[in-house]
Image (tube, rainbow, N blue to C red):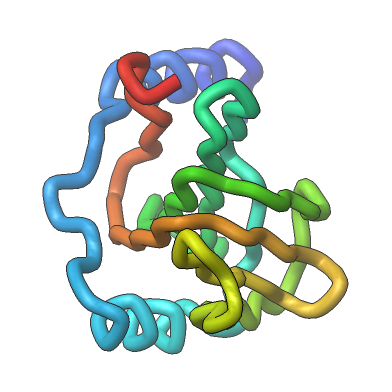
Length: 134
């Protein structure tokens, strides 16, 4: 593909950036979505240290598909990650000995986050953290 065409597609994608309307509302929904995306590629998409938020994108490279699953971690207390990894196997657990409440999001040595909230959503377009949350 010519470089100008890739640049045009990138610009078109940036214009379509939007916030998903359907984030997971329960632990069961979150677990089901994570299981569905098991084995996908993962990449840290956006991180805001000031607002303590991390947005991770999971995707499978398929022709004519831009489908992704995004994981949003809010009020992050501990953040350790590789920027990109293969064969995602993310797990979310509730840390019972923590006040205030905490979730641990992990994928072996590649990812470990302690945060107060975790949400996931699927999207056919790329998303970003909203400016008001940054």
